[in-house]
Structure formats: structure tokens, C-alpha cells
Length: 337
Ligand SMILES: NC(=O)c1ccc[n+]([C@@H]2O[C@H](COP(=O)([O-])OP(=O)(O)OC[C@H]3O[C@@H](n4cnc5c(N)ncnc54)[C@H](O)[C@@H]3O)[C@@H](O)[C@H]2O)c1
Image (cartoon, rainbow, N blue to C red; front, side, top):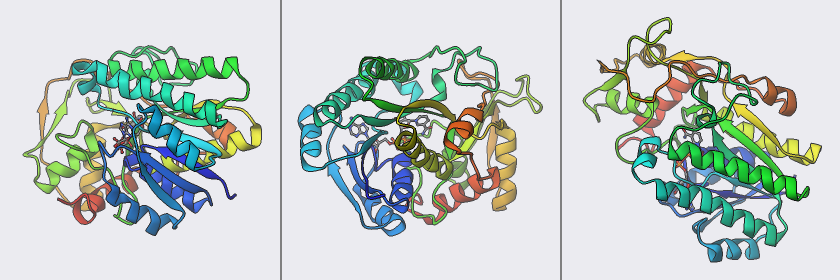
């Protein structure tokens, strides 16, 4: 295609996998990252797996000068905006940081894009924007209402993007609401590098199984689900990456934006995830039962019909592959401490 894409937060977990998918689809890629939650070492695997048309610019989306420079140095066809903070519990403690990185950062990016005349954007949103009591499967028109600063920062960005598109039809924005990204590149060369105690189930499983944590806690055994544990929609990060390429193709062909869920459409319980991980990797996950966590809902999974209908995209990879690839990364990749 010969197009060039700016990928903010491109050194991070989802950004790195998406960058490989973009390179493989023929895009040139400029990663723009302040490396606050990643390292520049990921550039090697991205180029090895995707191809050489990738460069890294160290910069911060909150800094207009950093953005002006990258848009002055390159002519982009589109931007994919991953950069930001993502830990729900941390967002409750330091909300200003979340609004600054996620909302102000998005605002600065939109300004810089507007000045540069680049008005095609893919935005990383999240299933956390859906109201807690919205019925599953969650479709895109379900009620929106975030319950923590992280979710609210995403919701504010969605509203901002909606207003910008309404005001100027030259803007095209694909809002992608991710469910629960897990897994790693099947090569074992790229994956998630959580800093500190992991907040999510899969990195907790891999680290506890590796002996880096004493055990994993399963929060709640009395939810109204078949085995009593909470149910979520886990999606392989490789499928998520492909979803971004599909969103760019959609905007190029349809000349308009969209808002879609990216999930598998299948709910998986915490216990099913652990059982699957143990089976496919022939390991034992050390776990303990613990009380429910405040704010956790019993069941969340996506209606994925719209993404398939509009973009022709559908998650392909199974729970077995998610578990196998996550463990390979933990045991053999740079994820192995
Ligand atoms: N991983 C998930 O479970 C999940 C779920 C839903 C949505 N998302 C969203 O997807 C996006 C990517 O998530 P991820 O899991 O890859 O996170 P990540 O932390 O691995 O990647 C984010 C990247 O952005 C960079 N960054 C942070 N603040 C920045 C700033 N101000 N300027 C420039 N770079 C900055 C970090 O260094 C990192 O490389 C985020 O916006 C996140 O909110 C993630």
C-alpha cells in the first residue's frame, strides 16, 4: 500500500504487535513513545518479524513540540493512538495523571494532526466504557458509563472524537473497544511486560506459575456463573493487531469512521482460563481463593457482530493459543526475567 502510519505508544504491548501486523501489510511505521512503560529494545523484534520500514521517535503525546516535530519530519496517512496509562486501580489513586496522559495527550495529538492535515485516526478504547449493568453480549449501542478515572478518560476521549468528527467531516476516527487482550507473538519475541504487580489475570497466571509470585488469587467463587468465577472476553493480541489493520482498510475504502468492539464474543471464566493454561502447557498454576473485589462485575463479553459486518474482521485464535503463546513469552522471550 505504501502508506505511512504514526503509532503512538508503539513500543507497548498492543502497539508492538500491531506494528508488526502493519509492516506485514505493507505500511511504513513510525513508533512514537516516551518509553514510560516499554523499552526501545522492542524495535529489534518488530523489525525482525515485520520488516525494516520502522523507526522509533522518542516523544510524549502531552508535549506539543514533540508532536509538531514528528509531523514535520514525516508525511503520515493515518495515526494509531495507543499511548496512555491503563491501570484501573492506579487511576483511582492518581486521577490527574490519567486525565493528563489520556485526555490531554489525545487533545494535543488531535491538534497536531489537524495542523498537519492528517485526520485519520484509530483510537484505543476499552470495554470499561460500558455501564456495569449493561446486558451481555455488549453491543456498541449499550449504555456507556465508566466507573473509574481510567474508564472515564477513555469515555471523554470518545466524546471528544465524536465532536471533532461532527464538526469537520474530513476527520475519520475508528474507535476500537478492546475487551481483554492476552497472549503474545507466537515467535516468543514480543509480549506484555507488566511493570510491578500485574493487574490482569494472564500475566498473574504466567508469573505465579514461573514462581515469580507466591500464588494467584481468584477473586470470588460465588458469582452467578457456571463455576462461580468471573467471566470475561479474552482476545489474543495478534487478533487485536489484525483488527487495527482492518480498521485502517475500512476507513480507506469507506471514507468514514466507525466504533466497534474487538473481542471474541465468548465469555471465559477465571477457572476455565486456569484449567486451559494448565492443560496446554502441562504446568500447575498455584492459586488461592479470595473474596470478590469491589467493582468487579460477574460477566462481560462482547457482541462482535458489528466488527465482522463492517470490517470483515473476526478473532481467529483460540484460548489454547492465548495460553500457549503467553507461557512461551514468559519462559523463553524477553518476558523471562
Ligand atoms: N492492555 C489492555 O488490557 C487494554 C485494554 C483496553 C484498552 N487498552 C488501551 O490500549 C492502549 C495500549 O495498551 P497496552 O496494553 O499496549 O499498554 P502499554 O502500557 O504496554 O503501552 C502503552 C505505551 O504508551 C507509552 N506511553 C504512555 N504514556 C505516553 C505518553 N504520554 N506519550 C508517549 N508515550 C506514552 C508507554 O511507554 C507504552 O509503550 C492504551 O491506550 C490502553 O488504555 C489496553
